[in-house]
Length: 360
Image 1 (cartoon, rainbow, N blue to C red):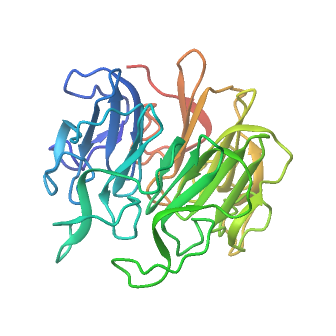
Image 2: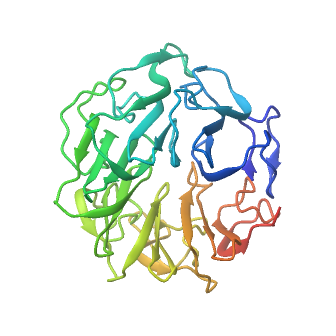
Image 3: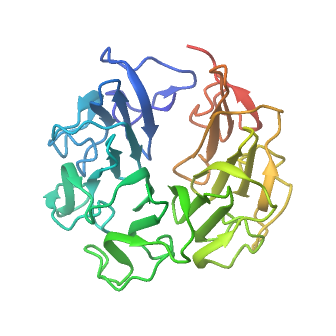
């Protein structure tokens, strides 16, 4: 559900309630990025659909948009997939990470790329099929952000690679980016500074967050809207800073300019930009430098629900939203609804409280 103006064959039409994905496949995991969606079947085959100018569908046909799921090539079976801005990454059952799509800032974790047509004049570095992330690391989770990627290994070490212009890698970089020419990139995984043990890492737009083995949440990178959760909005951090509040988290999820976390009891908290209700609280709860509505520390999501999964999303400041799934399988979303992304049928009406996604 949501905007369907890229990759469904008919532009400028919106889906405010769930519609069935064509193709007849059955999936066990899925993830939606800026404009692409990917999903994994029970046997590990992966399909993607949407625009493909940078090879982000992984089907070896960069430049060809698909309104229906296409098989990711390469013969690698994945147990999970994560979709970012113009790239995606998959994780095998053995913990090996592969990425595909745009590679202008090293977000694929490999320097071996071809050129894709892109959407602008010229050609752009990319890989239209999955490439092995360099370093020989074994991951327990991998997360694709807007232009960087992070993951936590089975030995609880956090690594990030790709764009580091806003400190989102949590490590120092001197490598020159392929497209920008500045020294704020890494084409190979770098350990996040601080030496902490992370069980999970999430990559957002310009920031990243992780959960330690002790349940503590840390964030690093851009902090213009308080998305690092440390109460110091306006001050970016090149290294992990603790999220305030003393909460114990099981997971965190990073969006555009906001972050959310689930406690070990399934209670949802969010922090950061709150202009369209994406935190699940009154947008006027607090403010950040410049007078923008935000919360610089975690706030309890209203509604009294407990969740088993949580995802922060949105590709623009007016499209930011969050969704969660309860133990009974009910889906709830909150935040912007201008493209029907809350799935409740009330397209155009934002909500600062979780609303039930209309069951298919």
